[in-house]
Length: 86
Image (cartoon, rainbow, N blue to C red; front, side):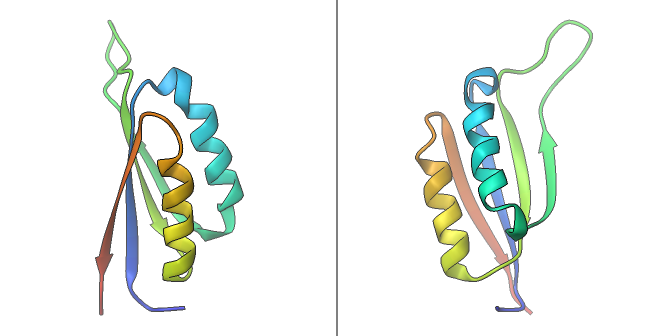
């Protein structure tokens, strides 16, 4: 394991359609998710059909790449990785 902080930014479009498949990947990699934050616009009149999930990833670079590849397989999902080194 490396000591870098790896953050995965996951943009999900059409949340109602794609959320189940995204959640399946999150469950598959549950032991690699240290922190998970979901963001989407919501107010009294609407709930945004898209959103962003931030994952603080725990594990190797290979495991992060594998999770990103699985998420990229989901239609309407785009993943970016940020690495903060020490």
